[in-house]
Length: 613
Ligand code: ADP
Image 1: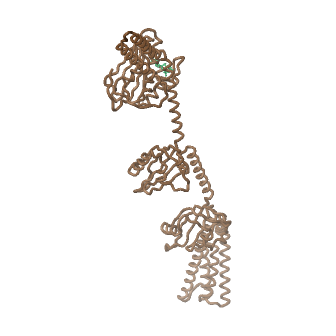
Image 2 (image 1 turned 120 degrees about the vertical axis):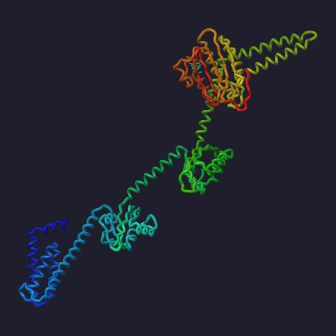
């Protein structure tokens, strides 16, 4: 600002008039002194030139020109014959005067140019001092040539202390790459940027974001490097903190969800595990994970699953999703769910990332749930049998009564003289048949009461229906309900658990009987079985009861949905879960002529035989 103010002042007229009169007087004084000392023209001209250069520093070209003309005039007046006249006698005397004039103007212009360049440099340096970025210049030998105020503030050395010192040894620079490589890049692009670590005067390290620009001279030769740095230590520290806490959260989340992550380079065989993956495989973090290490831990019964996954991944599969178990030396078993997918790894390389989840607890919970479900189903069966108790008692009572009658007849034939062994034999055969009938019913009831695990076997549909009919027949008769079965001849066997499928049919039949009992009079129940198009068997129970209320239809198979005051609403929900577990579905609809029909489909057994009506 100061230099600008003074140039404004200088252009004011009073200043100029003073400068010009004072300057010309000074030149006159020099010329008079030189003349008094009888110095020669050349010496006087030289003295005047010096005075003009000094005076020209005080103002612009106009002043220099005025002083140069004044000097030339004085040399003409006092040193060129005729003396004290501006006339010039000899033509050759023009030469020194013109030479003086040209030299004077050229030298003053040159000096002013240098001064202006200096001023520009000073201004630039001043601006560089204003910036918050540290700026310093180091030459080809890495010696510091310029050091701005921000550099003083950041690093702690003043400009005087830093200038002249090699930058690298002063700042103990740590480069992100090899310095020679950096210099090559700088020479090529005239620019480099990256992060550096510098050591301050107090020994503390700072991370700076650094930009280097190569300075070249007129001939294109590299002369210096302008280095601009800003301090990113705090930002870096904050980023590091965020990264660290994110990593901590991730590790915590992995630990909570028992989910480890892994990376696997199929080409090189390198495996990377997260901390949780080490915990799942119960390996020390110091051990380098490998596929061989994983293989060692695989449960012998699941080795095939694992090898199958390895084979598919090595060919062209881009993802895998497997479940297998691990067997530990102390015979503990862990259930794992492993998923992975291929990621971009460059040409000819195959790399996978994925997650390994320890699902042992989930599996145990699922097993418990299955157990509870089967207990519930059993409870529901027992309760259904309770409803059929009169019917069952009758079914067992009838053959027992026949056994008693035949036994008494047998005794009578034996007491005759002579005993009639032919009749006795006939009675004993009947006793055996009746006892077998009773035993059959008891066996069926016991099977329904038992909480045995499900056993999937091929079942003839006609047999299934017959066994159910044997249990419910009397109950239906008691309610004045006729029962018809319509099993089509081409119905194949179904694959399923006999007890569970009987339970479904019994539940539906009992529901139908209960619904029909609400309407007095004769009723009809039809149990049917047909083969549908898609290799499924459809079993249906059609009743002549009041039908299902429209609003109840969507909720029939929901747990705890009931319209009966003493109902639990679990019967149909259990039926639905059994049928779905068998790969089928269940539905209900009202008949056009009254009553409702409950149907369920079951997949047909592949190696099936035909059933008869
Ligand atoms: P619950 O028998 O304990 O009520 P279910 O799940 O067996 O439980 O039956 C749920 C409801 O379905 C019954 O309360 C009844 O309203 C309806 N329902 C079942 N079968 C029939 C049927 N054949 N006719 C009319 N409504 C029925």
